[in-house]
Image (tube, rainbow, N blue to C red; front, top):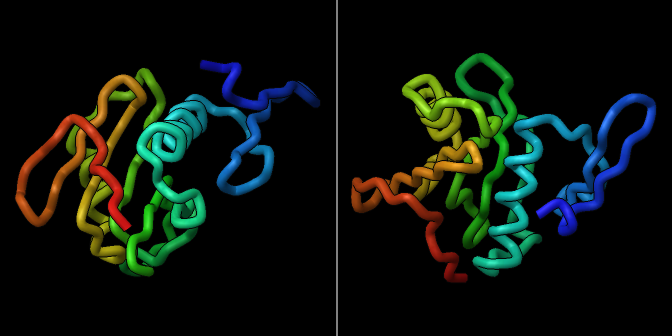
Amino acid sequence: MEERFRIRKAEGKTFIFDFIRRKEVVLTPEEWVRQQILYYLVHYLQYPPALISVEKQIRVGSRNRRYDIVVYRNDVPWLIIECKAEDAVLNDKVLSQLLAYNSTLRVAYLCISNGHQIFTFDIMHLKWETSLPVYHP
């Protein structure tokens, strides 16, 4: 899968080009998962890249936090994805983090993934899925 990504080493660090943010970022284990999900959203599920926001700051209660991925639909947040490193366990702590972001964003779908597992909660239908929702404009 690495051939799909522009990766380079410099100054003792490894960088990957984020095609959504249009810049190089340090390639951490979490960033690797985030980039794979972004690629999948755009190239397989046909999500419009212009409607995807990556690592933006939001206010959650009295704290500033950064979400991983938010997809917009009709100019409002529609899906939030929390990415964790491949060896991370998707547990209640990860879910709590996602729910905190959603207290501000109010999306239709919540998603957590470590690259091996993906769980998406459809808020309207109150059910968990093991795939991402289809994007319809």
